[in-house]
Image (cartoon, rainbow over all chains, first blue to last red; front, side, top):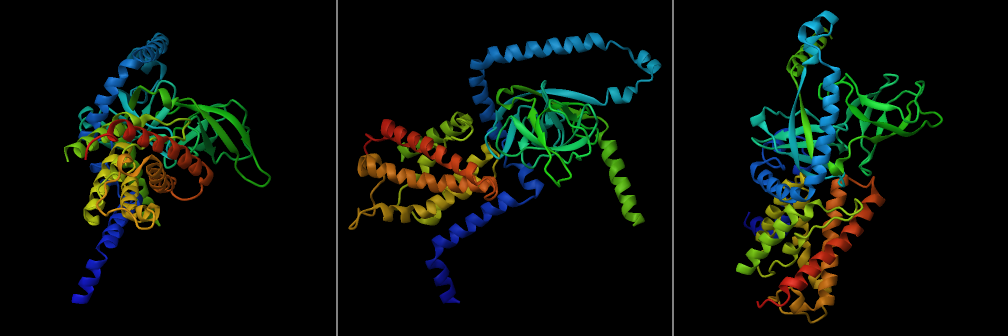
Length: 281
Length: 167
């Protein structure tokens, strides 16, 4: 026993090295959501405040650009508003489902930290649980979709960007309603791949891609991008589609968090039906 | 002691609040905080130094949302550093308690030392981040572009601010 202890002690450097590296590897590859949600990400109060401070200081240099973006966005919203001046009674008369129309609400937030050049990119925004944000909510901007909330602290949230190999988004071709899955390929922040579009469907250059109704994160029909090029190889059953993303992640300043008021109902319904399916088996 | 404490805060603030956003052509990153690790004293006990490197790496990871990756690279760098110094030192060697800086070692020795250590560090970071070798050439491009950028920044800052300081 004494010899073992002496041996371990003589290799103390190497053993410390091994233990620390194993701890790191565990942190990197563990899929336990709690360990990442709790403290160790950019939304924790300390890093959030530091990033906010840095962003505020740098923000002064970008004020003109931010202003231009907001003015352009206001113009679009005003136009939408003038097209959609329906009261609740009119909607009922027209047979529009008022629950569906008011299903989503939006919370505006400022991006205080973002990256586009890594293999897994994240953003940090300056709103958190005190604005009733929760992990799993979708994030969009004027041009298109941005990502999904990964973790929240009181005043900050970390967002898994769609420029992240692990973030898959269900989307469809606007023209033909053909469903597919959007996945970023890890290199170019302007392009992504649309997977699983069957080859018997008609696909055209420049087709618009929007989010599909098969997700509870984003509203249906949120802009994703346009088809830049596509090809299908000899015996493959799916197209290889390259999508030019409509969101410009390098100039992202303000984003909107999507709150789906029916998500809770939808999720509980889905879990009930999965449960029943399992019972029937 | 006061000077190294100042250096720690200076480099971390520079890294996390400003240099973090740099990504030239999407390949060249600047990890200026490595400067802290490569100028750690050599006469402290290794487990202690590695623990310090681990904490430093985790703090960087929190800001980059890459939990564990920078920490793994920092610990490895600290572990391999004495070996690399022994390789670079001519036969007969220097004293054990020599402090490594441009002033004591000369700029050419120091540059090679920085290049080797930063290369080890960046290789670990980028291959861990890619999760393997499927983006091999792209990862390699990132490593070499960032190696030039980071090493240049480290040497330049050391030369400007810390080379004529008394120890």
